[in-house]
Amino acid sequence: MSQISDYVESFLERLNIDISKVTDLLVYDPANPLLFNTGLFFVLFVGFLIVYRIFRSLKVLKMLFVILFSLYFYYKSSGVYCLILLGVAVSDFLLGLFLQWAREGNRRFLMRLTVAVNVLTNVGMLAYFKYFNLLIDSVNKLFTTEFDTLELILPAGISFFTFRSISYMVDIYRGQIDACRRPLDYLFFLTFFPPLLAGPVVRAKDMLPQIAANPVATREMTSEGIWLIIVGLIKKMVIADYISGNFVDRVFDNPALYSGFENLMASFGFTIQLYCDFSGYSDMAIGIALLLGYRFADNFNSPFKAQNPTEFWHRWHISLSTWLRDYVYIPLGGNRCSKPRAYFNQFATMVIGGFWHGASWMYVIWGGAHGILLVAHKSLRGILPDEKDTREEICEDGTIRTRPTLGARIMASPFTKGFNILVTFCFVAATFMLFRARTMEDVGMMWHQIFTNFHLSVAPQFLTGYLAIVCAMLFGYLVHISPSFLTGAVQRWFMKSPLLIQAILLAIALLIVIQVRSSDLVPFLYLQY
Image 1 (cartoon, rainbow, N blue to C red):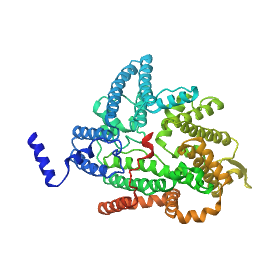
Image 2 (cartoon, rainbow, N blue to C red):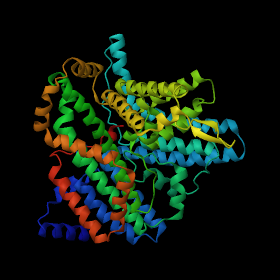
Image 3 (cartoon, rainbow, N blue to C red):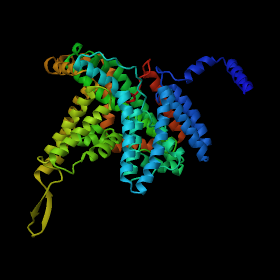
Image 4 (cartoon, one colour):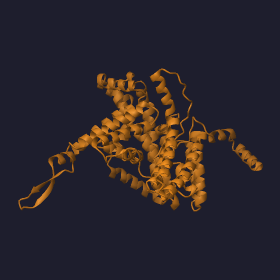
């Protein structure tokens, strides 16, 4: 073994490679996590993909290799906290088998107890790592105490893999799936690296059957995967990072220094920044999974085309919104109760969803604001006309035909739909101020500037001074609102192109990313959640 080590060391020395620098690059560094938008990940993933293809017909070896790479990937982002991920996987597997046994024997008390242990363990971890210091700070401010906070490092992706863990146990309890019988399968599911850090929230009932089938990426899946990786990189590094570092962060950090017009543009800028940042990660995660033969559902569906708050949450972070619906809203009672209670369930679900995002009361307020929007929309839905409303008419020949009502025709008109989209977008952008701002004082200052110091006269100066920012924002919004048949046609053309053309386009995208990227690594926003 020492001879091999000596040989490798002498070989690296002949290549003039500093072994210590290579070692430093491969070990955990909190300042340089291993992310999809880093060169190190690209190099490691190419090597990983080569070995993965070699093992594709050897299922057990392939699974072991993916698990080891996934654990290393998580180690590079969270260090020793990868042991927590392993612990959750072992715990889930054993509890799942026990829950399956209790369910088959109709032992209701043991079933509820097992699910309770799982939920309390996962929620307890979240409470400790994400919310303990927030609780201490809140107590200190409320009671003027001086309790010390702890120096806690939030394990990356903990919110996402704990949600997967909870849904697995609850689905077994509900009889929707059977417990996983093979520990390797469950370890593969929970540690699978593409969605590990920032979603989408993949459920066992969708993933475990694919694992059992031992899939191989088809030509179509490979092409689609490359396309999504290109789109995700451009969204993240060409639009989101550029807008953030050169404009949005400056305004949100000091809103009083900028006019109301600039504050409004920063709000619109952050809205498209957040979308491109998060959906860019989802695109890359889904694309990488496709290259490995696994398919996840879309996590975003043009959310800024939504005509109301309810539709927005059917299009935005779909895996989270459906998770909250199935495991929070429905257990609270859903809409199978009185209207006031249903409205409360909707509001409470959104507050919980806001609190999930991070240890700040601003997220709770943001969730509450969306809860109010959803309740308001559901209340108005019973008053306003619907485009499906119809009325019956008697024709001259005595026959009866159904025609849309006047209100339905108004609601179905392009003008009304465009107006609804614009109003919904403005409400969403306003709530994202709460999401991005550090305090309510900052939000108040932004609104103060918008309503009292708007100064539209600065618009020409803004356009000339921030021309590249404006172009990046417009590009992001224009692509987003483009008709689906147009963007779909471009994607289909790419997928039908030869692999050489796809590789060239990927290389061009990487060159563009390298040219516009900031000097410092900009992590994905949802890594902190």
